[in-house]
Each structure stands twice: as structure tokens, then as C-alpha cells.
Image (tube, rainbow, N blue to C red; front, top):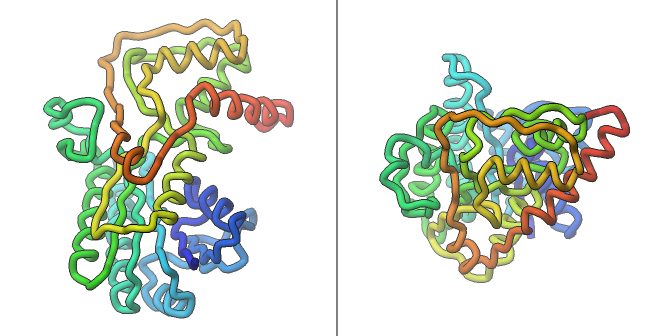
Length: 307
């Protein structure tokens, strides 16, 4: 099998590429900028996905069986510059990639999307946890752009014979060396014996480990029967409150840190993953199992003074 991974130097793409290569799968990695530390794949194209000439030439030459589109721009602010970059990298780049795939004759796409497409005013009308049929009403422009990209992918698959499109909507992904986010920050605070303040302790999330996110993609690649369009929610094995997550991590780390809580309105970001469990055999690790391994890794970082 030959696989192309866009965004291969990103958080998900890098972990996915490592796993694919460990299985002797022929991988073409596409990264936006040259990175000294990127060593995952020797077959690598350094190009913006909006550069049609370079992308067309390399994809035609490699001709992958599957394109896994992990490339994304996650805004850090809500200003106009970030909005422009989100539109360019999440929508226009996807549109260009699909155009090239159509011209070359590539048939199978896996698109990595996000729980952010659900979050908005209509979430109050949804049955929780969120399933693939829940209302989509993105609250932020990132979610809006990822939803636009999803629709582009579906339209692409419908316009060609034997084209297939799988969409994976990930909940928040953590672990595997990520140095930000709620899980890293909780562990860091407890290891340093610092006070932890949680503004909305009753907020609920389906925390997903990076290993399980990668496994969901591998399961799609192994699937014998492919349908025209399939969308799967990919989340953690448990729906947990932030305070529950904090207390579990505190217990495992044996920390003496104090947990203080606020009364901010709870956010519910829980995903129903039963479709992925039933149709592709998705079986995420229990939170207690993978979080212990993550704590050990962060302890090593602390020992090496890179925390």
C-alpha cells in the first residue's frame, strides 16, 4: 500500500507517519515548511498545499492508494489574520488538493476533522453525547472552515466513479509528547506541586489519546469494504468531567497540589463513538491506562529539565 500524509510534521501527522513506516507502508509525507527535526520519512515533499504545480507533480509520480489529509491550521487567536490563515489552509488548501486528486485519478481520501464543527447554539438541541447525526453549528471560524472542508470532500467523492471519502471527527487529542492542552497542564501542575484552578469543573470531554487517534486511521486502512462516504466520531473511551480527570491525575502522581474550582458554565464536549466501534472496530484505551504512560513520559521530561 502507498499512502500520502499531508501535514506530516504536525502533531497527528507525525505520529501517524511513524506508525505507518513501522508497518513497512510506503509513505509520501507532505509538510509545509522545512524542519530540521523532521526525520520520519525520507520520501518527503516540502510544499504548501496551495502550490498546485509542485503538489500535482509529486502526487502523480507517487500515485498513492490513499491520501490522508491531516494538514490543518488551528488558530491561536480570533483576529482577521488568523481567520485568513484558517480559510487558506483549511479550506482553499483542501480544495486544491481535491482538484489535483481528481485530475490525477486518485480515488480514496481520509479527511481528519474535529468536534469543533458541532459546537454552537444548536448544541443545546442535540442529544448528548454527540453522534454523527447531531446538529452541526460551528461556534468558531476554525470549526466553520473544517465543516466547509468536509463538504468539499463529500462533493469531490460524489463527482467521480469509485471515489471514497472517510471523515474522522476527532475530540481533543492529547499525549505522545504534546506540550500544551488540559492533560499536559494538569500533569505539569501536579508534578510541580502547584495549585490547580479549574474554572468549569463540571465540563465534560471525551479525551482522546494520540495513539488511539492514529489507530482509528489504521483501522480505516485495514477495512476490506469501503463505502462511498462515511463519517465517524473518534473520541476517548470515557466521558469525564474536568474535575474527575484532575482528581485521577492527582491520585496517580501522588501530588500534594490543591485543586480549586470556579463556577463557570460547563461545556459539554462528549462524543458517541459507537458507530466507529461497531463498523471499524475502534477500541480506545481506558483513560487510566494511557494516562499512566503519559505521566511517566512527562516525568522523564521533568528529569531532563524540558518540562
